[in-house]
Length: 260
Image (cartoon, rainbow, N blue to C red; front, side, top):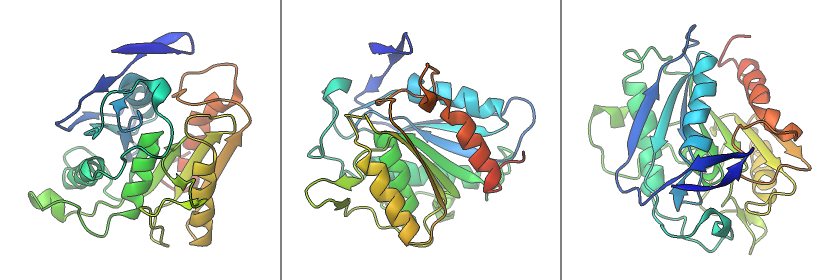
């Protein structure tokens, strides 16, 4: 389904996802050995499957990074993108987290076959997908579902995480980090990006997560911009925030996931 324009072009979303799937996109040219599992956003209602999915894989694979696009289950259905705001929605379903944990385990299990370094597997998510990146970064000690096969014996801890305009991290009632997110010193290095004028998932989501990461001694990088709004994906506009892919590339080099 199409809805609205981003950078003058329409984008496509899917809804009522009841069966998760993953699609592996191999690097174009040199293979860095790194892999990124991508979580499209959509408020746990829909998945922005091209804007925050396939277009992201095109960028990653062009940089020698294997992209694994996860079509995770969305526990809610119905509202349009304009309505996807507020903290009273049900984000407590374990289905997306189950799918994220399972996918990371599968990627590690197939690392040799897919030409991936099992120590360079990260996650990248937008909006609700940013929340999912944080959730799997802080819930990796045990699976939230019964083991299925040998892939579930692999670690589901990401080696790094990128959360772009994440939501559902700030508890507005308590002015604190969402109680479902438990950061420790073992939480992976994290990159955060947000616009101050984001009126869907406010900048407080990134600020609180960054602050707690810093307090736990977790390497974290936070980029804030005055303008940008929400759900811009990686489509370039005149706004400086849309140059964020280069920032992520530099950060991945800095933490040793890819070579300069």
